Image (cartoon, rainbow, N blue to C red; front, side, top):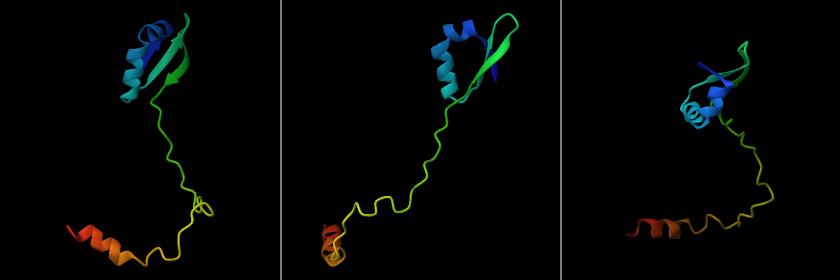
Length: 79
């Protein structure tokens, strides 16, 4: 983890963002006392929970859906 001053951060913003996207982390310091004010880390997308029954009532599957299976299978395998 690297520490940078606000001025360095502003000057090298694009470069720092590229490095963050590669997995690096940065701490941003501010002022004469080098007060730590922020930590820049890569963004991690949270996996979305799949909701069971989400499409209930939105899809209409015909009752004879599987009746023509042999016909469909013949189309796939008759090359």
